[in-house]
Image (cartoon, rainbow, N blue to C red; front, side, top):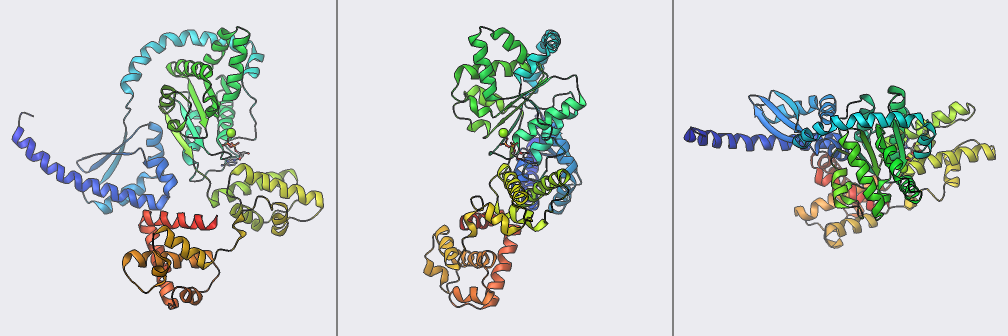
Length: 480
Ligand code: ADP
Ligand code: MG
């Protein structure tokens, strides 16, 4: 500050560089986003903060060591390559962890060490009376292991975070908050954590239960005037996992108790894992202070699965079936058919496979797609319905606020031509009409125009995320 003139000059210079750099950074982000897909991108890059350029080293900030390690292992190399194409000034990349909660934690640590002593003591007492434990928690299903969990872009963050918890006794983020729609694997991951910790650290006490059971236990303790031991039991575990936390919404005294348990465990640096069907901020009916505290550690969402993941899961389930009964023959095309047609959730998908297999052995008929269609009539998407070019034109015109007549006209302004190309592209993708037929239905155009449109939209989808999303939305609307 003393060399103010020089300082200002330098600052201006730097500001210019910085905006340039920021632009390069943003462009690089778009590139990697297009490469790895929206879901994965959000999981890993949402919290990456652009830091600064030190000499020729670009510094990025992430909130946890875990994120740093994962990005380093999986994306850093690629990111650097992209960045270097964008800006010559960048030669290398460092990812640093900024812990915004450093200060708060420091003060808490001091208090912790004192308490920890006494908590160990309770742990010991508690494990002496083993039967309490099974009453308190819920049994763990050994088939819900990490080995049996198929990883894809939609769940890799949740999976990696769950894994991390089982890899060391050190707490790297607390709590771990897993959320996602029903049947996407939250409970599976919680069980997998319990199994893995039992394997790696048999002395650690892991307690898994649903929020519903937590409430039930709590109310029971109230009734029997036994809240002291209730509290002690919960507060003495090393890892507490509460499934479907949204259940405590509106249940005030349970919330209160959960919050105390939660705080005590976190203060003592004991791991907490929580699952819910929505993100912490969206947990209506749960007190603000609890919601915000739940979002304190690592929040990982599980997105709906994509086709590859569904197929992978079916293949792994099919293997289990075959192990149990080597006689059954499960053809790949059947699995592909199921993965394509059943995209609601994985529980339903699994159920569908089980149903087809059960029916086949019951009816003594070999497995086939035709049989699956018959047995799963209720599950298979209504998208059997044929999509027509007419549907596509209407929906696209609607979406872009155009009149159908304009879409089919010969007008070439961008606002009309682009939607028209998208409509042609969708017609090619979603119907079995030939190129000349499509051309004809679009105001008597030539088939080469259609080819050009398809190519153009494909290119745009690869280079422009907004367009990619629009097309994806339209596709979904049309298929449902
Ligand atoms: P949630 O708790 O999110 O509602 P679950 O964990 O109960 O969902 O999962 C539903 C079913 O789908 C379970 O049988 C689970 O084993 C299976 N499942 C979910 N995701 C996966 C996955 N990625 N790999 C293998 N099985 C999965
Ligand atoms: Mg569940």
